[in-house]
Amino acid sequence: MECIFCGIVSREIPATVVAEDEQIMAFPDIHPKAPVHIIVIPKQHIESIAHLGADHSDVIAAIIYAAKRIAAEKHLEGYKLVFNVGRLGGQSVDHLHLHLLGGWTQPDDWKKGFPVE
Image 1 (cartoon, rainbow, N blue to C red):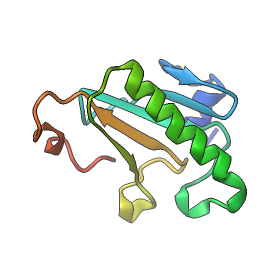
Image 2 (image 1 turned 90 degrees about the vertical axis):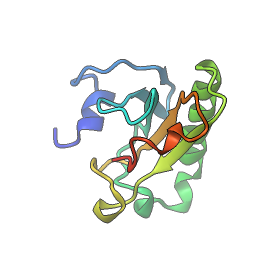
Image 3 (image 1 turned 30 degrees about the horizontal axis):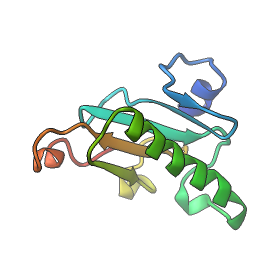
Image 4 (image 1 turned 180 degrees about the horizontal axis):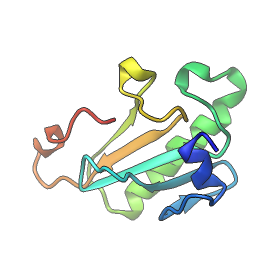
């Protein structure tokens, strides 16, 4: 197994799964940059946004909708959705993933902990 996120999907690597359906899985980031920092991934291995095709639109919609649901479940009043693309864009795992960041209590608190890796 070369991809850590594929290992989580296959349950070879343990994770606290907070959301899952046939297309996506979501779990807390192991190095959180916010009070709430959830990673949402497609179960299918796609390296990054740069590797998406038109046939992946349903996967991206599922990822974004899952983030919206999780944010509502966690009662986040404001949050960020971040995709890092490629090493120069800060992507540290070669499996497409969305960072859901929130839980701040003050308007400028979101500035702490950036950049997101």
